[in-house]
Image 1 (cartoon, one colour):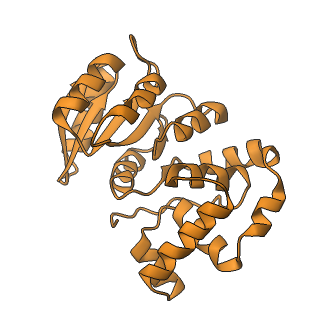
Image 2: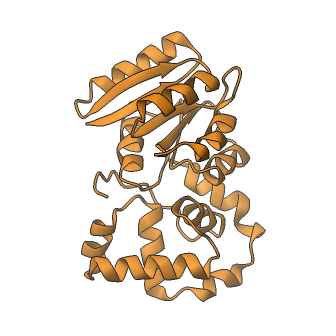
Length: 219
């Protein structure tokens, strides 16, 4: 069972989110907050697996709360749920460590998938967001960074961005889990990033991977 805290300042919207998550069967909402400050307090006391976090909230907004979660141990995975699909805001969330970004206009299944995929340690973005980020930021980093990656490292990174787990990547590429882990580490070193969220963000900015996220549950 995946334990979740939902932070959303609109009561009716929050009720709908909670019902959607609870009805899924494998998800349990253990706490609700209507502002970022209360959300942080709940996260520290309840230690959820995943936080579904709205951006526009009083006291602390979602991005401010997300930044402060770096001090929380154990740190939960975070899925941003927002009205805003602005590329700059999406990138801010990814830079701060979010593993999911779902726009509120999305179908309900996208939020469920985002929670499950984030819980597994992989990235999930709403349909269309990947392409928007890639198109908007492809020119911000030198393209020769891509030349540092071997063809197989590129394939591994593409799969990671699309939401595949390490096990699924090894099966797809017909190689061992240890090999996939090594190629992921090598790609992160060559792209000068230190964590999974940054690897995904940089890959999207470079236009390396813009496929539809996979609905994976495995870690």
